[in-house]
Length: 467
Ligand code: ADP
Image (tube, rainbow, N blue to C red):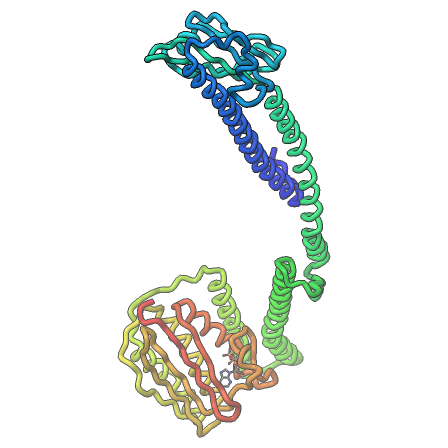
């Protein structure tokens, strides 16, 4: 089973664990370093005494020093050797002279030590069986390359053992205390630092689709948590906009479908009030057919948009001659343009072939050109031209029509957006530009717009030449 500790506990556990490890490694290092230094210094001390004695004894060869060994030592070493055992042995290991400032009277010498000393080796040993422990040095004294006698110096390790024991105790007690204290401090800091997270969580719990206007109080925080709360607030803002758009969208769809239904219902009710002639029924049916066509178009457009959004819309890619396609689209629009009294001009269209879905591209361009014609007064013009630049094809559709207000520009690609909702139903339902934008994006392109009220509008469609 996985246990998910709260973050403040996790932080404290990690923090304390790492601290314990660091302190443990550090303590081992201090302990071992001190131990080695002290051992080296003890060995150096007994060696220096042993060296002085062995060279003095070599010089006094044959002289009887054993009579008053202690005075001899004082003379040679310049002081009484405190806390030491010093003994001189002959080749057989028999002690000739000795002095001891310790409880231990003599230094037990093993056979192997004696043998090694007779071979001329200096031997260091620690006598573990005695209490307190004793560190010894055994130095052979040579006369013409022959070992004649052996000097042994021993020193008590009581002080050393006591020092090491105290250090060990200090470390064993100090590490848990330090870890405990810093762990507690770390826990309190983590709790204090993470308190705002809890506030954010509680605020997030309060927010639902019903109160998307509520925000987390960031105060004047600019740290990570302040930024987190701001990001959260921005996300709620975006959610609110999305919710509003969905609500707006549903009411737009209902409205757009309700109008033709209301018309059909009204016409049918009037027709049913009395007997009608065959021509009157035909006219009624024709009017119904128009409304049905209109509803079918709305439903088709919505289906198209939702398929693109659900990424279910596949492009039927083929090589499209842009010039030919634009010529045909303009040809189809010509009757509408003539009827409206607006001149439709096709200029400088580059002879390029792109990979695209021709039907959808036609829809893209006819939506924009039709808009140009719809929103330009009689006597005006709509001009189509194209250029290629940096691997892109740019098709511009310029008109000198009524133009779009600055504040409306950013909404014109939204579904059901119409700058002037009160206008005649025939101008459109506000889905054309959303579809054009989607088609451009499906092809890896985009649409931009520039407009000035009363002067006209330019739509520029960018399509990559090699998508
Ligand atoms: P519609 O079906 O209403 O034309 P569109 O999505 O094609 O819907 O366009 C959205 C809105 O953008 C239009 O209602 C209109 O207000 C504005 N618009 C689009 N093209 C032009 C243009 N060439 N000149 C002025 N306004 C335009």
